[in-house]
Image (cartoon, rainbow, N blue to C red; front, side):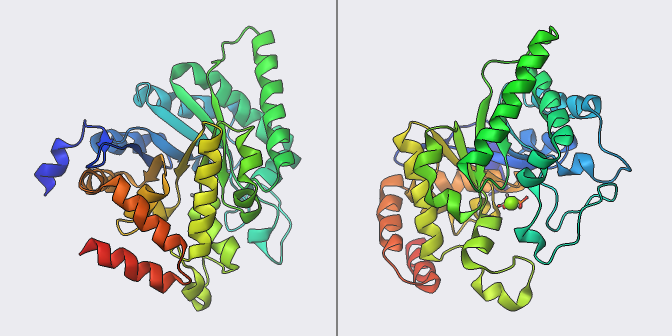
Length: 322
Ligand code: PEP
Ligand code: MG
């Protein structure tokens, strides 16, 4: 089996009936890029920049960040790299940021909410990203977007920094795609409106499931409610994909669900364009997809969307696997 996977390393990802999708990797540091290349990743679908901010005693400078982003872009050699702007707060703390203690940190001051408030932090990251953009195919993604207003505010800051850099005589790419994570139900529901203004969506199922089901992703006692196959989740995913396609945009998924072999047939059937997962899952996923008919999976997904429970969807998916 390993020999079969290796042969697929430099191949595109194509279903048995000829549908192309992209398999990308989730990374946390520039060092992870080696593993992406070795495992045949067609891009980076999620670069979690939090790690740049953790494990130090002050904020990383523009220069430190620029070097990290540039390294990833150069080592990916022109393949797409989706960088997520800072997603701190919630369960992820920074010792040097004095954030208020909250009753519900997952529903609190985190990610884009913090970045729009602490513009000093956000602008530094945006500048570093913009400067790095000339070294590859950079795509910038904002986390935890709940409203169109937040997206527009973040985009405007990016445009401001871009104009400033150009005034300073610095080069910035003109082809940076700008997207959002869809991990809050309001955004998944309103995807048709967002799709007019963003270049792409990436569905963050880790958070989307917890917020849709109102079940803390860290709490064992309510883990029975953490249901990727709940038809409510599948309908949100479908809504996002269809909204993007109606505007000629693409949708990826970078939550754990995207790399789950049992979920991949359904996601292919729902029309997902890009799957971002841990690097070691890529070759098995490419092999699996090459044996699936996208047309059959579309029928499977249509059936799943009409079911009432996660258990029923799981049973349907298992019947196909046999
Ligand atoms: C997600 O929410 O699915 C996601 C990819 O982001 P994180 O796990 O970093 O919150
Ligand atoms: Mg998330």
